[in-house]
Amino acid sequence: MKRIFLLVCLGFPMVSWAQKDTVFYNERTEIIASRKNASSYSVDYPDTTDKNRVISKTFSIAGEIWSEGSFLLLDDSKKVRDGLLRTWYKKNGKLKSEINYKKDKLDGSVLTYWSNGQLRRNDIFENDKFLSGKCYTKQGQDTVHYDYYTKPSYQGGQEKLYEYLKENLQYPVQAKKDEKEGTVIVRFFVEKNGTVSEVTALKSSGNYQLDAEAVRVVSNMNKWNPAKIEGDIARTPYKLPVKFFLKKSENDF
Image (cartoon, rainbow, N blue to C red; front, side):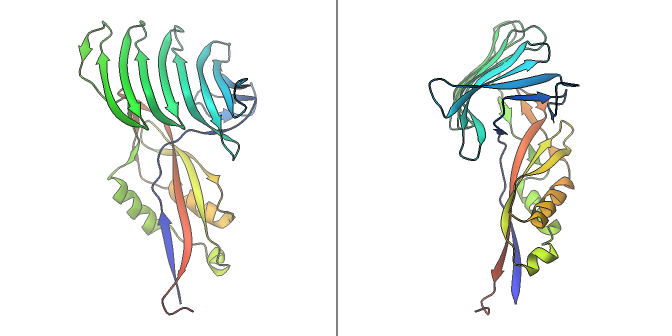
């Protein structure tokens, strides 16, 4: 007799994209097929000093630069933030932030600026851990420090998320019969109102039934607490690994 175990590994937000020359986005920063109806686009340029890196730049459809940063290319043809990433205000073109990453984690200085050019934040991180920092008002005066980034979280915490997945995941009948196992990396966005959108199987388990089940359950999740960047609610991508496996009981030989 076999017992079925569904192991859910709680994930964390990460940002990575398949390497492409030019990618177009709509106003919600969703990838679209062509320049038509696009509000922005990104272009990857080879890093002449390192073949394992690219310099990625994002522009408005009119050509104003919005961001520029160094990305490390991974073995699975994805890229992650690694090095300095700069962003600019869309309205006036002034520098908005200068943030250092190491393999997609905050590492080094995190500098942000108000739209008038005044320094807003000067933080130091190491491997995503906050070490020290100061925050300033638009007039340049010291103010109470607050977190640069607050991750999205399931309402009720990780235990509630685990309970929801454990209670609602159903091992697909045919996959069970065929003894199919695997891990599905589910990627989705947590919207500003806490709802989940754009749920996809970023990395397949190797079985479409397991992939479909993971996507179905995540799509039906309750609301999350949205992320905050500089204290403002933000739409944020999230990855959740879901593992399906069958385990033999002690009486199986």
